[in-house]
Length: 262
Image 1 (cartoon, rainbow, N blue to C red):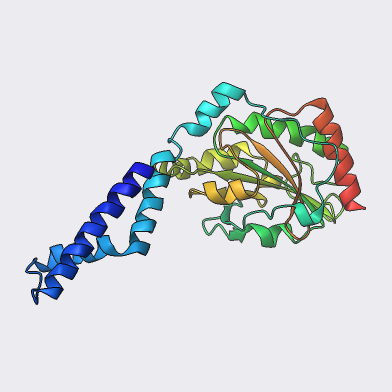
Image 2 (cartoon, rainbow, N blue to C red):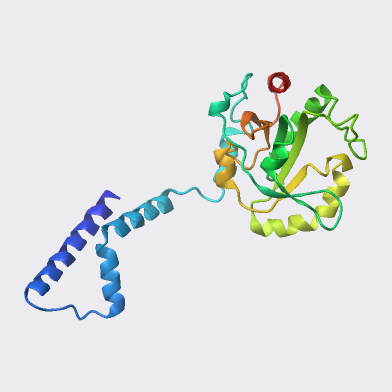
């Protein structure tokens, strides 16, 4: 990059000197308009700096399989989640995605994720981006539901006022970031409705877009893993874990959920 910068500076300086000499001699460039435009762009310092930044990011950007390679190197567990809540001021916000509910009916309602989260005081929001993440998320969900029986039972056809939690909910997000696979994913909706208990359809949300930047801002750095996020009523991620649940993480999740509810 330093060598490229010095070469560009030298070439731009040469062009500027030639143009000054021509103007001093009363001559004008006879370059064709396209070439003149190219020379003007080349001598534009700001444009050159932007181009260098683009070249830099292009040279060092992640490969398509970077996240899969990361899992091969580190395994499905990068770190064990801590036993305490993040301070609210230091917690990232959940991305406000526009998703589709699995609720039955041809006209499936679209849902703004943050609006759904703000309906309850506490939400456990899970994210899977492929089949690898499903068992990861389930390893947290099963003991979580057992610890909070006020959540709607998956065996119930629909949540009732007596079984629904007034301050706690589970939201499952299934995101397909690959546009080619998303077409196949849409064809599997009937199978998903059959597989997912009916009581969970309303809060089982589907997305068909690349959200890499948004999910990384929220702390979900790798789409090969399944992620669980404990989110407060303002949409802040107060606790987060990934991969298969450890006994310590399950205990921590239950403890911090009770703390956040109180």
